[in-house]
Image (cartoon, rainbow, N blue to C red; front, side, top):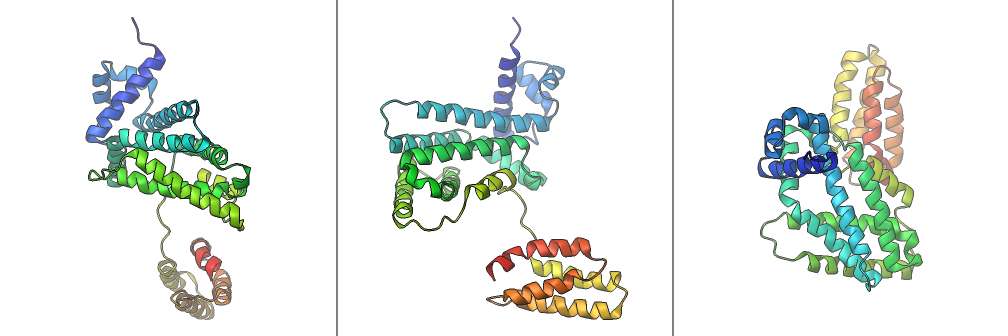
Length: 303
């Protein structure tokens, strides 16, 4: 009897996950996966056109597992909203614990191959957006309508705490159980929610920022280089690209003042914006100046 296409896909995904957890994706060939599944490599390629597609599908499969577990937790009868929230957190932590070896090996492979910073595939962004929506519903169910203005703030708090807890789960010496972690996290959220509702401060993060962060940003993106490195390169390019001695002199002076101001404990915004405007007027350096303007934004925002 032939294996149904859906069953075959699941078999491949589960087998690949086990092999990747044991030796890493880079050291696992499609032929090995096919052999372990008891099929030809050609049959494997009929289901997944490439190894990259298989890897991305694995993460989609992990999200599907999480959604199924969360749905079961959501449908548990006779639970208060807070008890349901604790169970949902515990479900997430348990799944991460279950997939720990696979996730660890994937991160090691990405770092070794330099693929850690290639950006998130669409499937991960889509599922992150779904998880943000799910988190919003769970938080508002637990704390009521009064928490609505601060839902995005609490989601970011949840994201940070869960990220820290996941690192603990990856530590073999960690002995604290996931249930205790979930209860402790709920206690932290209770305190934060109570303070926000009582004091009613201006929300730090709105939902639009949260959506954009979920869709575009990634903790796996490489850090921008420091503005001082960009300024140093611009000084060198002035000599080779700008022919006018006067423009070069003015450009070097502006870059020098910009560099000195960045090194101050409290950079002055008026100096930063003024010198950046001078630098933007330099011809033939548009590509590098665009980068400098982008990486200067944190300094301009907080000056």
